[in-house]
Structures are given as structure tokens and as C-alpha cells.
Image (cartoon, rainbow, N blue to C red):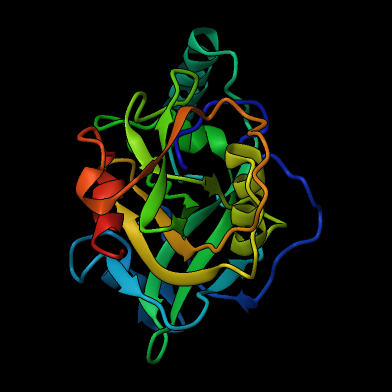
Length: 262
């Protein structure tokens, strides 16, 4: 889940870079578009020109830029980044300036496919943003849908996280970091956040845009095995199996989008 504030967020756990495709071309640093080989990435990057959910019949491709992304901002705005970051750290020491993938744009790739153009970026550039201070950084995250006997696993986000505190979401969820694939991330978060293990490879079913947190999420269906373990993080203060007609009222906005995919 994007917007977390706990140790290790966005940190590198594996130095091997994930380069499913290497993209070369000009970037636009507002995080909402740009051009790659003549294609206007603003079309499906959350700018409102096209739907913000692409249903997948095969895994999405990550097209990784060779250079890290740094917002194109004047010195005074970068100084404001530092000021805001220190204020966040004082308010919640769990904040950690790791790395994440910033999404420059997303577009369809044939029938049931999608390409996300991404670049390595510091987490602080995302964390300090709000409605009045937008650097255009749009992270890539993952979410899992786990169903068992007609019920789905949801978690109530704890007070230690950076966003959607006290609201419910489909568990697990995680940020895609440079050097890790989306599948690797969701499998790791599955064990850490729920204590469960996957029975098979997770199936990607959609990539969608969270317009509140301004980030992209790849949605996976996950079949889980027995027995259950114990979560090892404080991401959620409660986990609950819920029927579709018994979902908690306080769902996160992106969880409401996921309901349509069940």
C-alpha cells in the first residue's frame, strides 16, 4: 500500500534491477505523462483522458528508465521538500527515505496487456506531496485479493501508517521497489502482513489508479495455502474475513475500486 510510514518503506532488499524492458526517450517530470518513442503517456497516467483501470489477461510489463527520476523544481521548492520531510520524520519516526518506482505513464499493450513506464525515485518526493504541493511523483504499488470459502481478507490500517489510517483495504499491499518485481513484492507482503503463503503464482487482473493517494496499483488474485502463520508487521491492527455483502463501511477509496473486480 502506498502511503505507508514504517521502517524499510521503499528500501532496497535486492540490488538486482528489474528490467523487463529498457525504455529510452524524453521524460516529462510532472509525473503525469511524457513521450516515449512518440507515444503520449498522459493518455492513461491518471490525467483523466482515458479510464484509470486496465483489466489484465497477462502480466503488465515494466519499462524501466535508465536514470533516476528527480522532480524538475527550482531550488526553493526543493528546499521545501527538505523542510516537509523533516517535519514528517518528527511527527512519525517510522518514515524512511528509501526508493520506489515512479510511474511516468501507463498504456495498453495489445489485448489484455499493459505497459507501465517507471523510474527509480526517492520516497521523500512522494511523501511530502499534498494538494497544494505536488511534485508529480506517482508510485507503483501492488494489492492482493485473497478469497476463501466465499470470504475475502481485509485489513484495517493501523495508526502507524502514512495514509488511510483506520480504514479497511484488501490485504496484502506493498510498494514496488527498484530491484524487485511486482510479484516478488506481493508475495513478500503476503507473508509479512498476513502470515499466509501463496499456493501458486499470483494472477494479475488489473492495474488501476488511486486518485486520492495519486499512485498506480497492480491488483493480483492470490490463492493461499494452509496452515496460517502470524503477521510480522504492524501494517494492520486487525485482519478479517468478510463476505462481499458484509464488507466494512470504512473502506479506502481504492478498496471500493477493487470491489468491482471481485
